[in-house]
Image 1 (cartoon, rainbow, N blue to C red):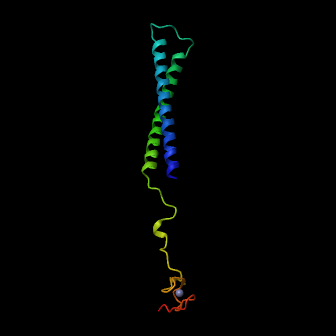
Image 2 (image 1 turned 180 degrees about the horizontal axis):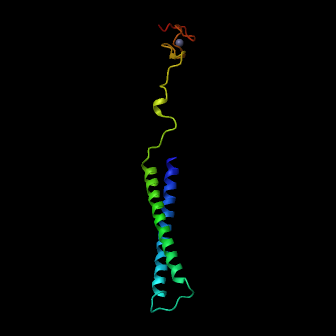
Image 3 (image 1 turned 135 degrees about the vertical axis):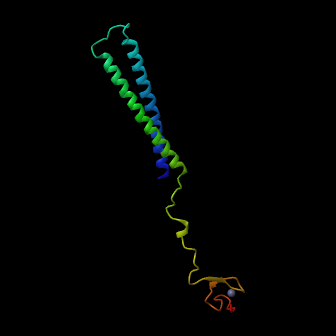
Length: 131
Ligand SMILES: [Zn+2]
């Protein structure tokens, strides 16, 4: 989950950054083209409405660039959140019960060391009383 958010954030970050750069450059070049070809002293418009469409395209790209900046910001927030977020453990350590000795706990015989139930008084191997 944490990694997914982080990766998604990175993807949005890069997409937003590239998209914003692309939109900004496209808008700037269109505006440059408009300034160059639509000046009163410049060459006439290639076709009627050329200058108006240049301006409207430039403003569309500018809007796209701002939208991409928003996506970039969302990507930054998501990736930072994913990076600092505490991984939620699937099985919290507090919920694990401490090991409980089984009912028939074993002990080692005082005499021969054979392991035997602690409830048995006499060793099944050598017969030594344990208590
Ligand atoms: Zn024994």
